[in-house]
Image (cartoon, rainbow, N blue to C red; front, side, top):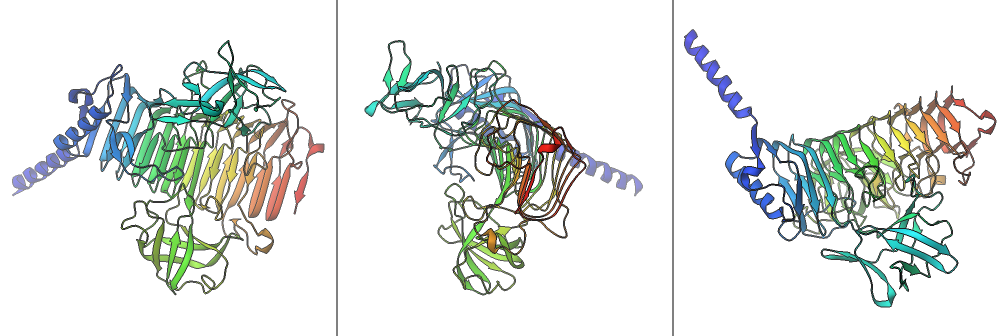
Length: 607
């Protein structure tokens, strides 16, 4: 019997090893190789289907050969995805459509996916334990146009498009840019210094009227309506619209995902958008130029990375984020606005922002809380979802409204007055760590965190982020992005000349700025709390030319300790906030043991 038992154990071990063994597949064996000028979209889709049919969708490593793989939309897989914080054109053309895989590794081996037209380069959906590594994403003809200022006078601006920009002068003498399947008339711009690549001081979002233009004999273009004395000859201006049809990489309803050694050089949306995912790790994930000699001055049309309604742990470490048109990272949930109350336990909730709807929001068993929008204050106790079903669509995909029933009775105030309320899903909120990253030369803000769970922002370099370097927000009125921060540690970061421009929420280098229309009616505090760690800012170095270091509104529990503030004269003072520390509706604030090279200039304003 002992011999039989031993044989049984050995057989069990062998079966388990065979089941868990990872199968390595060279995608070149399925006809996918660096493509020269050929379109690989259709071949990649066919190869992925063949690999799944032959090996299944579990424990597979797919390896690419190094080289360039051209991806065009015509033969790419078509898929309907509603992507948070993006426009919602459907269907989308997807370069690598990875759905339903488990323990998949895609090793690009240095592969570069060069996209054309309008595409979603990579989608990883309904998957578990997957890794994407060693690859890059770019577009041959970006939808952002770059021009060089040649003259700037009272008669208008003369500019020259970069060589790669496809342009023409259309009806009404409008400057039009185009590519495969798209045509745009950009009227907004961001200006960069030629040599430093910093955003031009105090220019923010430019209005660039490029109609009534004239082509000059030397090939440059004169725009008589575009007048701006701040734009000196040699300035690089990136002309853009506000379109954001798709990110570079899309993650949805996937858990334990790792992205490692990836570069996104351009996308007409976010570099990475992850929604309703459980655990995402970014290691050396870069949204960056191709190097110091890259003729482009821009990367993505919006955020470098963005996490909407995720849970588990979100981590970004050793990343490099530059030249994007928004934040390096934004972590938040989405408030549903309560539209109607059916009974004491049931409401209809609605996605409100036009770029955030159509995707899974919650499920039975999730914990939620209710927020009075005007005062951004909790109403009643935490409740639990019993059922949730779409109202305006037969399925979740594309839905804006949901009928939600809760385990416990709703507060009497909901539905009994004209006051607006939002619902926040507390279960789908992550812990976060943003460490050892570098951010430079981007528009708007450095980082944005809106999660009630433990968040660490440490050992990063914020180099000319143009606006606020770190923002803690919360808004149930415009963006509808949750939620209050209860436990945040900001330590050992180096801030270099943040706040050279002004954008939304940019009141100081670190800005704690929930959107509260009726702050005067608020009786509690939005951020922090009496029984939580609150916000701790310690051991950081601030190199700055202006006054505002910290702004905080509606907060209980904030420590600013052992920080070093160094003043330079790199730019003139210009910010309307003239206080080092400014607080509105704040309590339990500690400012101690900090080092100021000009202590006589330190000022505090408390409202």
